[in-house]
Length: 301
Image (tube, rainbow, N blue to C red; front, side, top):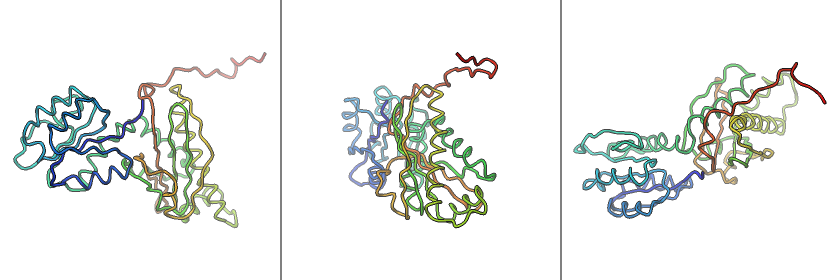
């Protein structure tokens, strides 16, 4: 199943949602704008593949409940954010199969609040919880040889967080799922990690730190891929592409809605951006049952 990247925005000419439309466009989403619920419903009747509907209160004063009910019939998995004013009925906020919107956001919209609501609703759509946990677990396992690292947070709708890093490595992968993993780090954090792993090695050149970042990226991606391998999904990943100097990640087509994680130990930081372009949700069920042979059971022909 392809992960859809279309968002329907229902907003009057007042432009209350123009800022979020620009942000979504920058992150590679196809944004469709209509001024009324009638136009939105006409668009929905064609059964387009949408991941999200965002509607301002000005556009939903008349016919809002009827529109919600029709959308739930046409596209039950599409998430809905509804703008609310002081006189908006305080109806229930429900899941994708319930009668109400998934999120009610007070207007005038606060940029951070709306961005957080979009992130929360779409993160599970693009990166279901098992994938999010697999990314975090893989990073902690790789950095586990240096006690003290913790996941500082996971975020969605983050593009090129690693653009602020001095050293970055990106590895594309393809097969049953495709995308890329990007790891970014400052020179100072790379030096601290390198000295923790290989104390006393001198001189510490930039190419050695670059190799370290590439190996961390390779090791983390390999562990993430185990998650899919256990579900009979075959993946092939390439070798690291190195990006040196802050801001240079913009040369790589990484401006995508990634699942981003920061790992920290004191002042040492490491940023990951995991991007999936497509995956099969049915493969995210429990791992395939396999039995590992004990040493005494192995027979050589």
